[in-house]
Amino acid sequence: MLCDDCKKHPATIFFKEVLPDRTVELHLCEQCAAKRGLISTKKMSPLEVMHKLLKEKDARDAEIICPVCYLSLAEFKRSGRFGCSHCINAFDPHIKELIKKIHHSDKHIGRKSASGRKRSIEIYWLRKELKKALEQEAYEEAARIRDRLKDYGVEDIG
Amino acid sequence: MALKILDNIRWLTPANKENQGEHPEIVVSSRIRLARNIDTIPFEMKMKNKDARHLLELTQSAIKQRLQGKFYEIKKLTPLEKESLLECHLISPGFIKKDSPTGVFINDKRNISVMINEEDHLRIQGLSGGLNLINLSEKVFDVEEVFGDELGYAFNENYGFLTSCPTNLGTGLRASVILHLPGLVFTNEVDKVLKGALQIGIAVRGIYGEGSEIKGSLFQISNQYTLGLKEEDLIEQIRKLIHMIIDIELKARDVILKKAHYEFEDKVFRSLGVLKSARIISSDEVLNLLSALRFGIGMGIIKDISLDLVNELLIVSRPANIQLYYGMVLEEHERDIRRAEYIRNRLNNPGAN
Image (cartoon, each protein chain N blue to C red):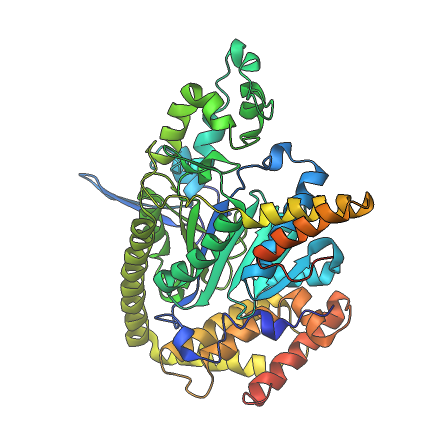
């Protein structure tokens, strides 16, 4: 069945109102029902809430800058994206409300991040050092780095 | 490097039935994804190509040490292979559009994929047929712990796991489930049910993500909020809602069969007839016919075709997959011919592969 108003979209919302002299029935699509004010427009998704709130700008936004990646609060408001793991601390007092309105909460109570051993990062830098030592023909240094890589269980040492 | 499609959908058509979730006749599939970023590397917004390459190297090193599976650099894949990974739900639509260095890890069992340099550094996701969220979350967290241990995540006591976009903060967890709801579509109750979901913070969209159309009575349902609830509570909330929807769907199906048994039986068998005989068929038509077939199997009208086969047809008949299946690039018209041929063969010899 098509919408009684626009006759284009399928009718998904049905209204029945019993008046003293007659009964009114309406078959409408969501848009037309919203136009008549019969339903509140769709509940906003977190992303829509965010984009709406990010439009609230302040003259000082350009001066609030993340000390690590140099993203400004103004840039954050334009893109809706953080630049690094430190931005949230740099912007915290200004975005607390935003986060609260997006999630209806401002406190994480879920799993925590185990403090990683970061072995892969360590191995990455050891490999770089090894390459450099070999280029400089510092073979004793290279042997030491190889031993450390072996301690990490790395087998294919170049 | 050839990507074997049938391998890539093993998560949906598992040889081992223990990996199958509940209610496969209504719940097509379940997915859990976690968004994670590495503490010491700039996020997407501020990431340079060299940072992206650095992260690819680091993740590959972590994978080599601790995980079993394959790593693919996305730019080394052909356009068809990329589309195919998308059609198999192993990567996201936004991911293939990126110009910066990106990669994907897919485990040996083909039920976990990790996108590297998506909107977040890591998007770790687990996939399964049927309703299987709890089991899946355990598998996903096992992989999540490996990367956390090897690389160190960006984490904050108040806001949890830090993500590129504030809408993913906290748990970074999105649980989504694809439901097949022909009963509710037919009885026109689907909007009412799904609007109720929206009110409690659960989103409904088409099966290929945000903005995609709803086709073949397939709906994707997922949590919207990621902060302020424990992971297991987020999952439980979705699980409860899904069980509620399953009950309503089953009731709607009963009503349909009581009211119009022959009409529905007729529709199911006509759909099967077309699938078994057509010579030219588009992927959208397949979606709708498979919807009727899935309904028929769920209601016990059709007994000699498995849901696994329906799932296989659903994904392999997508445009890129059908080309990879035949190992050649095909124009649309030719694709429709080959798709019809493939479906005929599979339905007329369901045992063969």
